[in-house]
Amino acid sequence: MAVKKVLLIGNGAREHVMAEALKRSRYHVELYVVGSAVNPGIRELAAEYLVADVCDKNAIGEFASRVRPDFAVVGPEAPKEAGIVDMLLELEIHSASPLQTVGRLESSKSYTRDLLEKHQIPGNPKFRVFYNEEGLEDFFLELGDDFVVKADGLKGGKGVKVSGDHLNGMEEGLEYARSCLLESGRVIVEEKLIGQEFSLMSFCDGTYVVDMPAVQDHKRAFEGDKGPNTGGMGSYSCENHLLPFLNISDVHEASDMNQRVAKALFEDTGSYFKGVMYGGFIVTRDGVRLIEYNARLGDPEAMNVLPLLKGDFVDICEGIINKTLDQVDIEFEKKATVCKYVVPEGYPDKPVKGEKIEVGEIPEGVRTYYASVDQREDGLYLSGSRAIAFVGVSDTLEEAERLAQSAVGSVKGPVFHRKDIGTKELIDKKVEMMKSIR
Image (cartoon, rainbow, N blue to C red; front, side, top):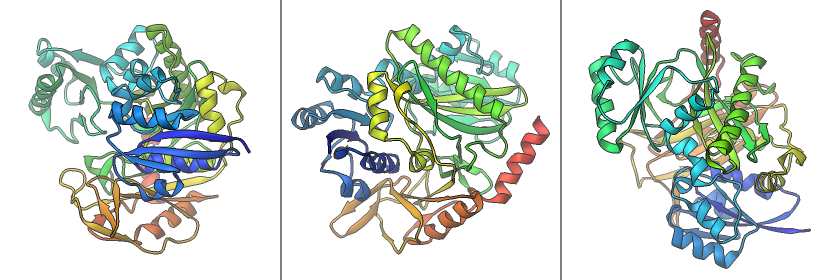
């Protein structure tokens, strides 16, 4: 059996499910991991595990030079922005992850809005990028009560503030916009879009794009989609690879946008986008609009799609790198999935850290993915962000939700989760909302 050495960077639940998918390969995969803490699930799968900052070029460069992997795959967004993929390429190690220049699709929201406008790709809301306060107040007046203010740059899903949810009135909007200008010299102000959000992630070799099943993520911390934004409290996908409020035409619209953006990025930069292009979309009464792009697998969405992958993840990664993705067999099982995250009390604003948690017996049929935890000699400790994800996979959404919910109670310690993700009650509300909008 052919041996493949793979370098995996990152130590969250997304990287745990990536590691699992790599190890399911028909090849004998030796996994070499760089993570900023010890993820017990990944460590079990790894041939070698280096604890280091995932943006540390020297540490990663030395490790990679010694190991000489066949290829690398980078999970989180920060190392891509820090140029880790570019550094590895200088060492002649290719990655199934995008270079810094095309990774701007995620690291700069203003770049992405301008890219769509420049290449006449439909999907933008009414927006403006500001580099100073000139015209700022006038644009707020033009938008009225419905606006969104976005910090430019990587904010872990927490840099976007929406009127009526996080900002009460124009004065608060202006205040947040001014603080963004002070911090980074740029801010994006947009019209607020009304509809239902969904994620469409696509494997992309720069030219060819293959879509994964559509997923709905739940950013809000509390039940009923209330509270502050988080990195994502959980997500679900359906056995028909659509969502209950989506039409097939909505997915085609989003998919078309991903393909056109891949082409535009090459025309704009001369570099191919190689990796996962993840569009955060919203379906409105006027069709599908882009909220933002990410240059990676989503977290939690990776845990909905990768367990369903029937193709070989190693072949997919090499197809991305070699621009031969059109020759790779990629299929997903027709099953439903529900992912629920257990998170520290106080998350996301004042999470407890350094507290010990205990994981009891997990019910059969549930996948467990470790996230922001630290495995020490005497057990498992909270690191202050999302801790453990439980995923139910079944023929029906109802059963997948029941499985995920049956597992969250196995974690003892100062933690909480959202019980409503994937439930009929919550989904029915979303379907009714879309009916009234359309």
